[in-house]
Length: 104
Image 1 (cartoon, rainbow, N blue to C red):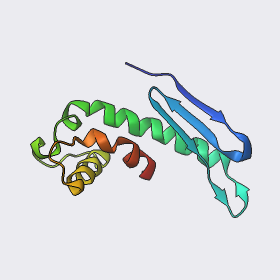
Image 2 (tube, rainbow, N blue to C red):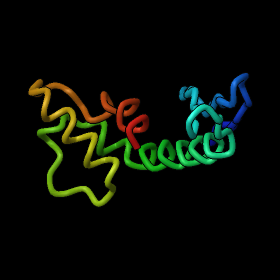
Image 3 (cartoon, rainbow, N blue to C red):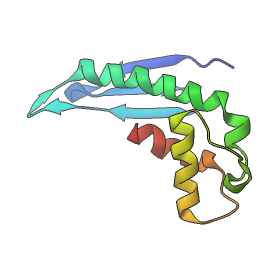
C-alpha cells in the first residue's frame, strides 16, 4: 500500500518528513548555518529506507532467532543485530525500525 510522502519545511531550516506511520523531524547545519537542502535529501532517503524495510516485513516480523541466513539488506541486518543484542528471544527486528532509520 503506497503512502503519500510529504516533506514540509519547518522554521530554522529543519523539515518534517511524513510517510504513512513515519514522522521525522530532520535538521542539519554547518556551524550556525542551517542546511535545509541537505535535510530534504535526508528525508527523501528516509522514505527509501522505509520502503526497503516494508518489502522485508514478512522476514523482519519473525522473532530474530528464527531468521535463518544472512540478510542482504544492510538495514535489515542492523535491525536483526540490534534486537539480538537486547537478548529478548521474543523480539522481532521490527522493534528496531525507528532507531535503524534514524541512525542511517
